[in-house]
Length: 144
Image (cartoon, one colour):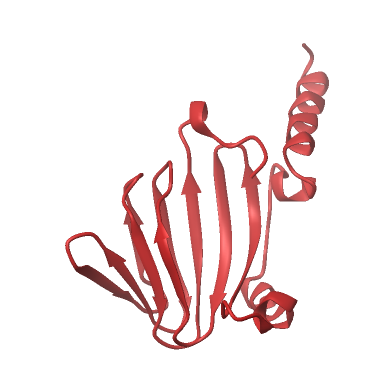
């Protein structure tokens, strides 16, 4: 297979996994301040859940999701099939872990959590974080 054919094959596999193929481009650049404003303007921000999110990178084995939460909102009983990281970019977040452990994150803090570990996320004030999820290739979702 020539380099051109190989690149076309990779592009086609990226396009087939997402309705927004630009989320799987070879190089992706986003401005987080702009993305945070979009989340605050999103219809989901007005809902009872008190949060809004957007997938900003979507490869078969790797996702980055930007999540913005209103004060007091909660994401309960989460568990991922692969390791995750939570990188605080705005406000204060409390992550509840097993055995009554908690971690409070402020902008710039990064928390990594092993696959399968149940956790909850609580917004102590208006906050936002980057959630990165990685899957072993064999368990990566086809169309998440």
